[in-house]
Length: 115
Image (cartoon, rainbow, N blue to C red; front, side, top):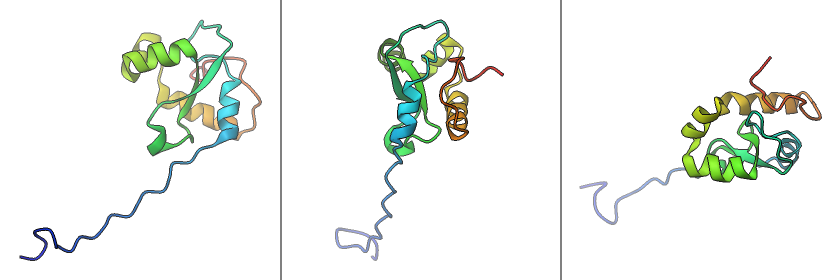
């Protein structure tokens, strides 16, 4: 039978292109305040909302301090993190990307969800 067994003709799936990394956008994200309302931490990380290897950096980064990134987001999961802090990370990441593209140097309001 054709297509069965070890010697079957197999068409290899095309390799996906590597996810896009944007070092300047990451640096810009690190200049923003922690996305968690009320957090005043000064050491900010560029955090990925979705898997960085698949989705890269574009519209996929948000700023968070060490605690909220590692202890909160990674330990409890994205859904719990969003619910606990009343965040919509998909929307927030899209808005950070838009503001970066518009050339804004930094945001005075750490929350990109407001007006």
